[in-house]
Length: 300
Image 1 (tube, rainbow, N blue to C red):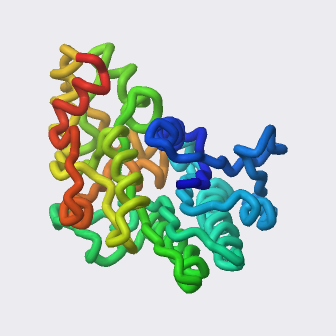
Image 2: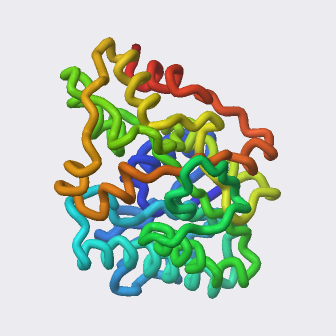
């Protein structure tokens, strides 16, 4: 299959692209810089420019859309929140509407979303059928997913990959947590009771590939491992794997003082999410348990 990928240099994309190529697929990257060769197509998601003729000429059969502003960089300002929203919604609208206008559109669009769709839900067990929350990230995810409608209306099978916390020592939440935990200064955030719906990077990539290839998967798909844990348990297991104590909590008030609204959205709230549709599709997680995932990722 010839697959168009946006966000190919990100945490998921950098693992996904070589995995696709090893499986015999041809990858075409969406890039913001002038294309170096036929394996790249230029776009400007904020400027609303995408070379539709190049997409037609490339013969794209499937699309994986991962691009978006990093939500965990710096304290959220009004401008940063607008960039987070625009980078997801405007880019997705541009891509979906361009695909819809193609004479021979691709069969499938797998578009990133996030479990932030559900908001802070306490101990409620959440599946793809659960309603959305009411906070900033919930609203972003709703608009992000709605932006794919032109593609769906054109008959393209659309999958919304609702990613949980993707674990990798190369980036994301785990990479930020490792330095203090390795020093023995790690611990739970706030009360530690909030649920963390996580997934190992390798399984996240596998779930995207299953969504790309399985014609029965469409709409929201929770990309999380089947065994969510509370934040305090995550801290305990990470400390155990590293052979370090993990009993230094980060008080909620201190996190809010440092990070403002982002502290509540990313660190102090949680969702207990289940991968109901992946499980029904027969997806086999290589790392369903947290300790096994962390030992694999950290070489322990």
